[in-house]
Amino acid sequence: MSSSTVAAQPTNASWQAWLCRFCWLALLMLALFLSVPHLNDYAWNYDEGPLLQTAALTNAGYPLFTETVFNKPPVLIWWLALAFKVGGTAVSTARLSLTLFNLIGLAALGWLASAWWQQRCAGPLAMGLWLLFPNALARLGVAMNDLPGMTLFLLTLVALTRFRQTEHMVWTAVSGFLFGLTLGVHPLLLFTVVPLLWLLLGGQSSTRVRLKTVLIFSGMAGGATAVWLLPSYSEAFVRWVITYNSAELGPDLQAWAANNISTMARYLLLDHWHLLLLALLTLPRLWQTTTKWYGVTAVLWLLSTLFALSQLSPMWPHYLIFTSYPLVLLAAGGLATLGQTAGQGTNEAERWRYLRPIHSGAILGVGLLLLITYASQPTHWPDWSATAANARHFLAEQPAHSMAIGDDQFILFAAGRLTPPPLAETSSKRISTGFLTVPEIINGRFAYNVTEFVFTNGRFNQLPDLQTWVKNEAAAQTNFDSMTIYQLKPLPERETTAQSSLGTGVLLNGYTLTLADTTIEVSLFWETAVAQTESLHRFVHLLDDTGTIAAQVDGIPLAGWLPTNQWQPGIPIIETLTLPLPTTPGHYRLVTGLYTFPQIQRLPASQPNGERWPNDAILLQEINIP
Image 1 (tube, rainbow, N blue to C red):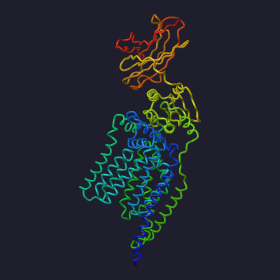
Image 2: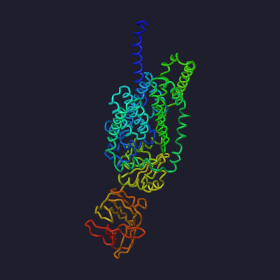
Image 3: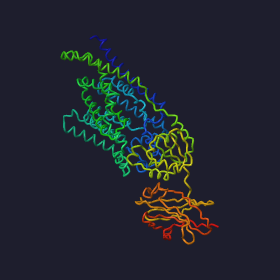
Image 4: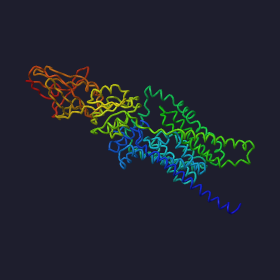
């Protein structure tokens, strides 16, 4: 070999290294460049709205889980709340922060491909394939926990790969900590522990070394889990993160959940068969090299993903993007090793010498078909429909005096409206499982003085009683095709604040009285200090001098919409009632109270000084009719 040939080898290697670095940087910058114009697009998925609302409410000081309803661990909420503190509470702020975060995951995917298959070009190939994967680019900044969870998992794999390369235990500790954070973003990714353990323990000849490795990894993973679990763990955390997510679904979602296997089969065998085939064609090639350990890791990753998704109830289609990562890694490995192994095989059996070119040609052909197919599919950026955009602009132009309740939290957030913390999520699943009821929504209206209701995507259509109640309470209604915005009548101000107590924990904190020519309008300000077990009836009686009832309104509070056993402690319940004025002149007394039904047994009513009200009827006001 001549000296010029020897000198050219490092020059070529250096040139290839710089070219690969340029491709890495170009792909990352291209992804960012294409994503930025779409930071204010409409929601890619319903889950974006609740996540943004929850982060904004947390940033505003509402306690997570105990007041703000959220059914996932808090790590991503903390990230978004920090982003809101730095860049302001806006859709674009959240999406830019997640785009930058997920670009780290894209870089980690490229690093893994290069390290696992020992080919520099495998990294840019994997990154490019993933960006071409249908709608992957559109999901880069989506405010959901799928891609951020995968980003942390990919970083976990990077740390474990460095451990296998260097055998330094510090990388085991780093990988354990990152895996704990992964679970704090997306607990579903617990299934990825299978390929992690294979990568962690495989090839370790000493039982003592294996035990030490497991202890360090699990200890750091447990420590990272404690970082997000201990500050959050409470009865409310258990209710929303564990009980709610494991609740039995309603019939509509049960039918959806029954189609997991067919959905995955259609996704892999019809929609992405070329990627699956390319990954399968790659396996024999990778198995014959020193990288086969990582090939097994990728296969275990894919199989554990498919098994975990098949067990979900329901398995939401957006989870299927999890399968793209191991498939893309395998596909990139096969394409990258074509040049490396094309000239090998001279010492193999005759049949392999002939099969190898055929195998390489198949990989190349399927790879080209895959690239052409994916490149020809346009990225679906979720544009604002005219209806949704008009509704958002209408809300944004109205003065935001209070929070708003709706079934599309994203539109509310984009219009500058926060939802009541207990109603940050109003999904079909929450309605289907019985974790969201009409009384809960009405309680939220009173607790946070809500003046706007927004019906947009049909989820509230599953609660017809809610629509009836809102229409009765509405002062104005604005329609945008299928969307309706209701402005509710403002809640009355309390004029009289004398507090009386009834039974165990029920309070009448005051009232407002308005006399008209022929009617009396009275607003009662109720509250309960403890949860009530009975549905009590309320009475408002207008009594003459003899104690005879001249006018009355009896029944379940709020015309039956909010029984006392649905009152939430500490929330003021305001109901306005109208009674006819008697035509007979005289002196009258307006009284109120509560009684059991059907026993008709009045609850003991006490005055502010502790004395019992006569007949357990609270005197509101004496009225003279001339």
